[in-house]
Length: 223
Image (cartoon, rainbow, N blue to C red; front, top):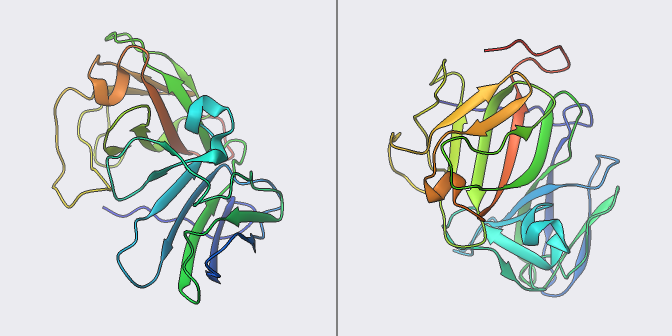
């Protein structure tokens, strides 16, 4: 399975390369809107794949926190990834994690109405989970629990074409597609966890997500 994004302002996605300085620095992007989801990694060495997201720390000072895209680690407070500085419409800021003279790559996302949504939700520990509004019928959903350890999960409507969705891939691991109790309904304007499993819907758990539309810029059809 492959998921592909076109770079540019219209789809709200930019790929940025830069060279680290070993201290805080700003990095320009071309999206014209403050990013809500950034993945960033050095091109050499074994440093972790850093993730920043508007939903970290419950959406309060999220850029004073980070998590890792190649790990199940919980969110953590640190100035090293983002220098405690929120992105703007033209730049994002990185801290001293970007080692001096080392080439870096960043994948930068902003929300686009009818196409993409980045947010968070609180679990309720029920098989009738919270309804998460996206404003479109999702084609692709990626989420992670961040208040404690938890893997990244991906559902899409290519591998599973009907509800209840059950069949995920963990992008932080090399494992094959799995099934179990991390059930979800994909609906005409959002999604709903259908499990009390702690990886998707623990009572009081905090989850961040990225969702992309089945029918971009068009009226979504009910499943």
